[in-house]
Image (cartoon, one colour):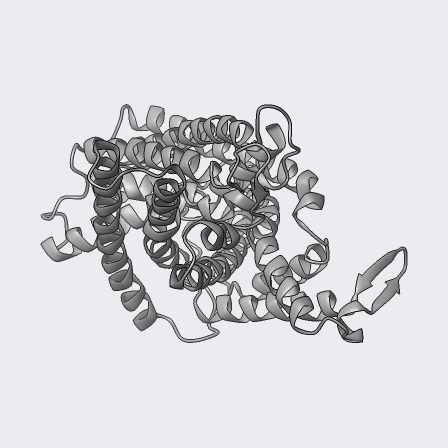
Length: 441
């Protein structure tokens, strides 16, 4: 249970936590807090539905579904399998790009914090994030050679510890800034339309905020893969996974509340879209360095948690398509390590492609909201609800069926709204950036 919890926490408490102060600024104390609690409750509930779909037939001795897509194939079948696969794996690629951007921004923030300390806050200390993206990509090429999900448990535990580290530092800095301000900042409804923000901008930003929250709670699309790492203790993997989900969602919500609320209390409506790299804080610079270094280490692990299911899918399909290929089975020895030639080639190419894509799209906050909005409804709500209905034989128009379909429909509307707001943000960011110019910190 603790290993599964560490995997989930590594996946969930990601870079998304750092945008929550900005989210609170767009929504305000009232809607912001309600939205975080509601999204947490929805993520927990639908994850418990999905956990029951790990086995087909008998919940204890039935056939295992090793991936999210396999579960959809076994329970729903038809065209929904392809739809699920396209959305799931496209989203995993998007997350890999987003995390590359986020890691580079945190590495750049370390350099800028030291520059501000040495040369003063008025010095622009500008630099490009491109070299840091390349460095992060090089590190991920090495870690991507870990064969499968089972063997990255230690990386998830280290990454989870790092997420607690930077979330706690963000919380502490928020408290210190709030005390220095002489009280809490912010308002019940967030950024005012009279404070240099047009009514249309207020709407777009509020919708993007919903997308950011949904991204911050996104992990359902790797839940089955995480559940497959659990040994089969009595009563079942599903029971263990439900406990792991409760522990991890409660833990992440606690940290989200701490960072989001204290960041908003410290900066009010001017909260940056990244709490630790937006430089609301300048000192102590060494503590900012520790926090940003923890973010980078965490993102190294989180990247692997998300891409390992994609690696496994591609390699399984290749083995099924070309069963006698020497290229697929050939291994080479590099020092004490034995590496598969195909795994080395394709995984390295994947990391290189996501790194290049990150250099093309260096605006993290807008990408995060769009990813969360697009994937939230189908992967976190629709497929878990439909699989649960099919597996449990829930009668059409029964009370439970109506409640589940109402939940799905409401989340669909939230996803559409979040996608619209985030798309507007991405379009605006594209106009301000040149390809390969990097994030200009």
